[in-house]
Image (cartoon, rainbow, N blue to C red; front, side, top):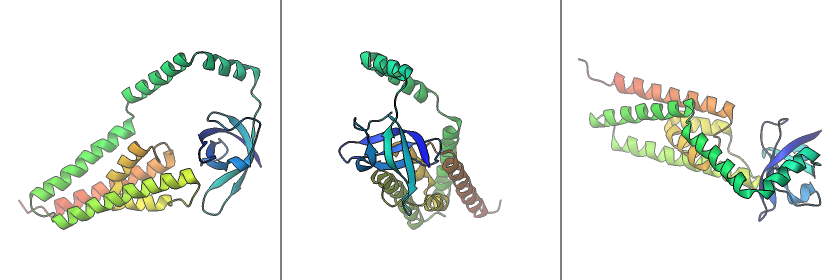
Length: 221
């Protein structure tokens, strides 16, 4: 089936990139040998392609063709190139506006993190949380961050990906603070709505379980 999309990432040094299409939920990998065009691929280029599935690696685009720009698109593109300073100012303004408006889900996650840390510190101060358990929790969060990093690296290379279920299990076990840190610093799994919905549920469940465990161990009044 022929599909349309836009090149969202192109690595000229490694000769591969990714296409985003409204007809496919995941970003689609393509290599330079799959590209058909007089001009090299670039980010923002509208393309048509044939999509295939490659085992567990996700979708791949074949026979990628650059689409012809309409007169209006060519005029807009030319205007943007003629005034790079204006384009840079627009991008900077957009970034500043986005940074000035933190999303409600993000604020909720940071509030939940404060509660989670507060429960840990409270229980540790009462001598019930052993240092071995704290070290194990720190190790779990390190593994979680590395899992996100490896998955992002695999996505760039078109290699075998870490299943989302594995990432969710790590969060549910107590690695969700590192998962959130990875989403923010690596820019990975930070915009997929369905993934973030499950991530939020695992974060709440882990914090609720920690709270139940802490309060169950409180001495009777």
